[in-house]
Amino acid sequence: MITKKTLTINDQKISYIDEGAKTAPPVLLIHGVPESSMLWKHIIPEIAAVGFRAIAPDLPGFGQSARFPYESAWENYVTFINDFMEALELEKIHLVVHDWGGMIGLRWACDNPDKVESLIITDTVLLPGYTWHPLAQKWRTPGYGEKVMEAMANKESWMAGMKKEIPSVEEGILEDFFAIFESAEKRDVILELYRSANKQLTEPYLNLAAIKNPVTILWGEHDPYISTDFAYQMRDQQFPHAVVHIIPETGHFIHVQAPDKVIPFLKEHFLSILK
Image (cartoon, rainbow, N blue to C red; front, side, top):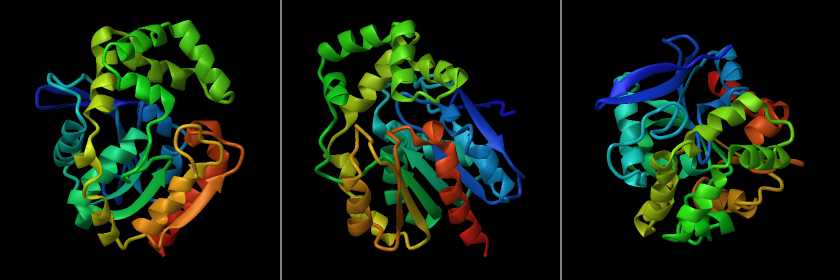
């Protein structure tokens, strides 16, 4: 059974999962929107089982972590990764990212390529030219985004919608995801994050080409938010040595929709590092 721990960073409560031997190579897993560390519920035990330490924070404002006492802009989440790693005394990491966790994590990696031992990139992108999906465009629109977010705070309706999108997902995982919608203050986290996106977010994207360590790119075949085209664009522009796997008959949330299809590729990635 996976349980969350807590620590305090800059007077702020942070909830996180930490499984595996403390002396094992650390793997940092960064979730997206609207998610929490429970996105990785099925993945974390597998990482620990092959000899790594799996660490997954609830990003500030998500899950059980307190929100920033200031704007939830992408720059502050990048700084959070540094603060979180320092708090846990992590020097170098294997990085696993999804959705906004990818934009944040990969943006951090642009500035710290020497700290990335390997990468697993899932359904996310850090490339100029990406067009926001319709829901993101609504969130990015002042006034309209607030109304959309308020409607999404109807738990019964939101849960029904997510179960339709991910029929196999566990209720407890969705309960943890829904925490971001529980108050107006928390819902603003999503709006602030999406509205903070600018060209400075993607500007140093070619820096990722400096990472020569193993890279695996996993993608849901029918991701409605970020098409599989971006999996190949990232490989071609940033990681020519990457291995790309498209998970058949899955959408955006592959880790909780079809963990049985994701885990073999994850094991392959980490076991190859141990050889």
